Image (cartoon, rainbow, N blue to C red; front, side):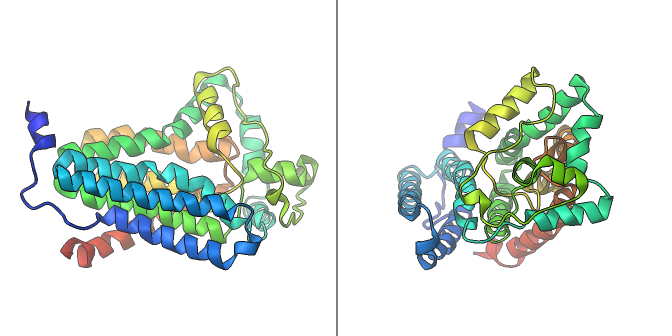
Length: 322
């Protein structure tokens, strides 16, 4: 009964306009729509992309109307959830947009070689092939979206005064990463190693493949214990929605780093120590399953700190006062 009242008690001062997360989505929508229009002749399927954006505007408007009819915490949560769940829809969109630009994997694989003297993503799974370790890696990688949902709901139910801030930071962080992925096309080892040839990679030769991924989306099979339950889960996720995009910086590492900082801020030891081990597994897993170069992980750490501090300051100095 207490939670029912918490969810459905009518807001005394309902918000008339869009939520901050909705404004962020509309801003990203506008930016990418302009890019589509300016690069129309270079796009492969611009019409469906524009129609998708129109549907997103209509969905946002519909959720706004539902909230105006029943202004309570539950409809507020639904409005926020729609924008956060749509992040999965926006992800493959980056692949369609970054095809405008040439691929940069040869540069990043070269930086990796210079920094480490070898390709960590190439040798990690080969050197550590234990089924238990493999399952731990895939558990860590597969925990990405469950961790986001868990932390968002934790703030909604137990730190509700900071819920809007948390949703803003998570959602905006995703869109910042997506914008980087559009203008910095790096696919990661699972795609580039196959395109360049494993023999070349092993010899430290990293050919420039130009616009190869405009017509090819094949990837290497995911390393690890193929009969494992978590392996199968990650493999099915990749099959359903993965495409050659979004390697640098690692948004998996970046977003989970931000989740860790949000957990620290919450003051909940339970939340922090639930996320921490999965976060550590995530940082290793992105290289283990060949989704990322090791420098992508480093980029994820640095970008997470910069984005979190910048968005926190933006919220405190400007958005919170709106």
